[in-house]
Image 1 (cartoon, rainbow, N blue to C red):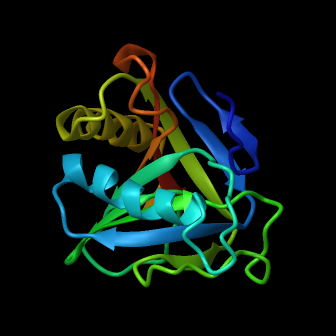
Image 2: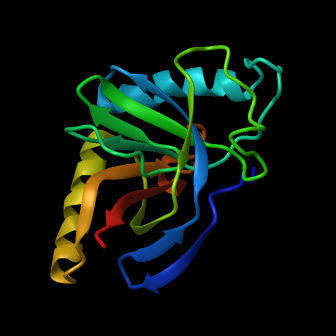
Length: 185
C-alpha cells in the first residue's frame, strides 16, 4: 500500500548515504516510557487512534511514512516527520501529517498525550538499510554510518533518528529503514 512521505530534494548522493533537504512538516507526537524495541508499538497505538478519528472533529487522517525513533540525552528540537526520541522520560514518537494540512486545519486531538508540532525544514544525511527493527541491528548500522560520515568529514548535530517505512506485517528482509542525522551548518 502506497503512503505519502515528506517532501525533500537530494543535495548529494554517495554509495552509502544521501544528503536531503526536507521541507517544513507537521507531526503528531506522543511520548512513551518504554525500551527501544517496545516504544514504537506503544506510541503507535496512541497516534493511530488520533489519525483513525479519535479527535474533536472525528476526522480520519491518511497514514504517512516513515515512523521514526530517536534517542536523545537532553531536550532537543524535533527533527523528524515521524520519530521516536529517547530522553529522560522515554521515547518521543512522531507521525508526519499529510501535506494538505496546516496547524489551523488539523483536528484537535481528544487524547492529551497527542501533540501537534511544526518541524522547520532542515538538511538531513540519510543512511538506508533493510531488515530487522531491533535495537541491536540499529546500533550496528548507526556505528557503520557514523564511521562513513567521519571518513567523509560530514558533521552532524543532535541525536540520530530511526525511520521505519513499512508495516510490521512486511517481511523483515524487505523492510525499508533509514537513519537520519541533521547536518551541521
